[in-house]
Image (tube, rainbow, N blue to C red; front, side, top):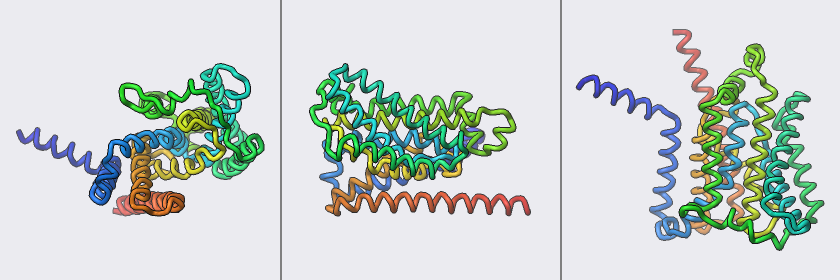
Amino acid sequence: MEQKVSRFRDGFNAVRRNKMTNIFIIFLVMVVIASIFARASFLSAYNIRTLVREAAFIGLVALGQSMLLLLGEIDLSVGAMSAFCGVISGILMVETGFNPFVIVFLCLILGAFLGFVNGILVTGLRLNSLIVTVGTVGIFNGLNLVITKGAAVLNIPKAIFFMGQGSFLHIPMPDVFLIVMFIIVVFIVKFTRLGRYIYAIGNNRETAKILGLPVSLVRIFAFCFSGLLSAMAGVIMVARIGTAQPSIGSAWALNSIAACVIGGISLVGGVGNPIGALIGVAIIIVIQNIIVLFGVSPYMQSAVSGIVVVAAISFDSITNMITTRRKRITKLD
């Protein structure tokens, strides 16, 4: 009996100390607050469906961003890539008359290629990923505006609308794509050699090189995979709204970073879990929904996103400093 109680106590303490538990509790608190102050609106079936569907887009981008952050990299161009790939898909569907699903597949490959370009610039020229992707944001956005002249691409084939507006087993299709990609990402990160390489490189890149790990290839793969997921989010958004707009994904970069950091993924790499990134997405979506339901100006959403990013990064930095200090004190003792 005592052994069972001891095992239960140890298991409970392990769950309590797990950062994921704390993040999930924060999410539940946000839901309770929203339910209390905006119960009729927040808990309505329409609002819940909207939240779940909208979370899929940031969720896809955040999954790709999480793999980069685990490596100690970052990609600020994910939103611009989403918009560019979405616009290219719309133009090709309208102008060429090819099978729209073939074009969707080609645009996913385009997203992976754009991520590959980012990865090559970062690894091949040994540049900082933050600086590189700040530059590629300008490139992708500039190309987007040149191609569209700032106007939305109309007359998207209705055949693809199911990807953004339909459902499968009562689950919105954007969330079906998110669930599939989430399973793939978790499998890669947790159950493959590549996943072990990602954590090893994120913890200490130089040591990983000394051990003979394919550091550059793993980093390039992460950029490619992030680009593919960004393109997927952009194309599905085109199917969702029925037009290809240059402004697609304008806030996805900040929100994806905030979601990952809120979800316990360290900015310095090697610490975190893609599951936390999705919980972070849920928290951000609930916060944005509260702003709308409480009648706050929609322009505040951008400000709130920025505040959430700064707060999450600050909290991550403070946590790292506290952990480092405790380790030093432990060594001295």
